Image 1 (tube, rainbow, N blue to C red):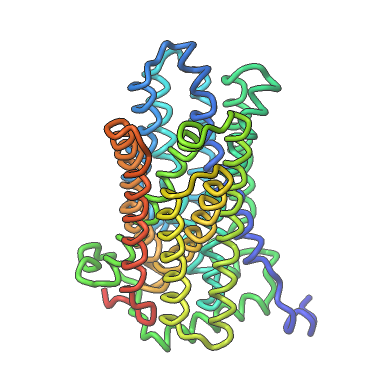
Image 2 (cartoon, helix red, strand yellow):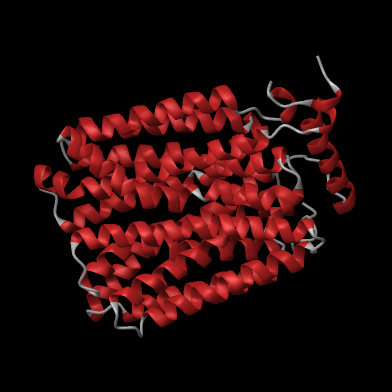
Length: 430
């Protein structure tokens, strides 16, 4: 029975869904981190040398990157609920199956499978952002999607190390982590829906609010009707390339720090293993806080009347400038405490880029937001494939992290400039 209260007070199902996506993405990054944490034990057991370790650690991104565009197409074609739940269950299965490895070859195959399974999660989540949220709330939705990355990175090492300590086995830790992931996927399928009116907990006020805001957005921006996805059509527009290259610049810095920050702190700043663990938690924890701050700042400014271009260019511009400045200064400080503070500053401002997950819904209609998000994340995750290798070559060739930090500074400039050339006020006529 619908009461007058139901018609005036909106439920908050949309935010519960995005908190669930935050959890799923955090689990995503915990599972990614598991192999790095367990690698010392695994390399001893299988006799894996450093070169083979690098290949195995990089292999995840080979399939993950190339699943982005197909993953976005699947989300547009078969709806995000099914894609997110299926992907989560499958990657949990691959995580658990890695425990059966008897050598590095089987482990490599398990990581390739993990990359395939995890690939569709971000594009499908971006699709949910377009379907469930009005334009004024998409900044918060975007950073909740992306906030799982620093959150999972901050906690991932601690959780996997704890499981290995409790069970005395990396294999058991992988199985427990995999089963937990499968449970999360099943819960996601039970709770998430592809549109507000299909979710039983959504009241009429919330559903009507979302539909009304979408209608206003479509009318104001002259949204083209969702039709056949024309991937090549996007290539004609500056905003598309700004989105693609901006996300690449972001990922070059983020994945570079995920791969190399612990080694940098240990080798260049001479921190102990325990200190490195604590510093990593602080640095990536700052990234999570920064992500939430950036999203809420952007949405609050828009709600106060700020135009899309003014808000997004200013917020992402500040993010790009302070990220670049932090990595540049890092090369010139001598104190380990100052280094940790600058790395925390880098992650705090860099993670404002989580707002990029609102851009696919800004640049195209809701029927194609999934595939456009997949194209964006494909470009970014090419950085995940190459940046660990690039930084490794630089450090090995120079015996120093100075040029590596200059590489991060240049990547920050790419992120900054690209973010400023996007037109956030109109959709691409594709």
